Image 1: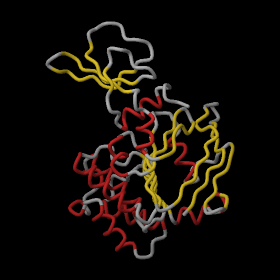
Image 2: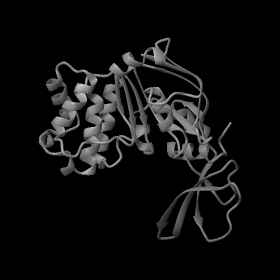
Image 3: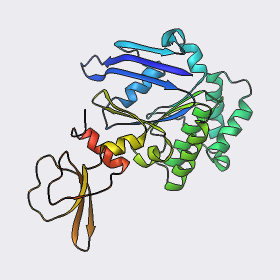
Image 4: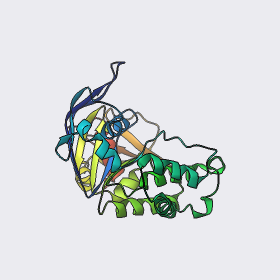
Length: 286
């Protein structure tokens, strides 16, 4: 599958510009991470990709054809977990997945449902009503419905929210395995999830695509712009953005990014989180 975005723009009736001139090529198989602060345009982009919204400008093409011309075929090949995905609390897990399978037009839904339940480790809850599930278990049901029918395109919006560390590791491995023969788009605020499994990273900020490339390239761009220092209560120089504070025996140790590090800041090796924060702070924008 190949998806092409050309000068994609989305302006809501309120006048808010959610996306501005986004150009992007997505090809399978691949696992693409999507990062950006709240309001950056990530959810809008995903809704446009699944034809949940129509752009106010630009074009989306799927395998060379306009999205609207390929909408029915795309949705037959799509697995989607939106951030605000709703569940039917009075249904059991199996009943809900059976309902979602019917909406997708699955012929052998029983086998597909069993496979999805096993993938998300919900075998013991298959007959439990959704209202009895924990937040993490409900999130796993949402992931399971996206997996139904062996979709070629998987789009996940914050899929690991509410999951404990062990569950997050399991799903990171699952997404990586799925991407060996599919196009998987993973939107998250959890930098560790992206760093662990994504070979390509997109960063949206204020509706514009600020970065598109491998994570290590973004990290290299932040070299020389990340450092640490002990906070003394004095005035910080303008342009120094604190990214972390940790209480230690010597006081508060700070980590920061800046275009020019002040003399009292000791340079440090950047992490992906440092590089991302450097970019969106405005100091690292081209």
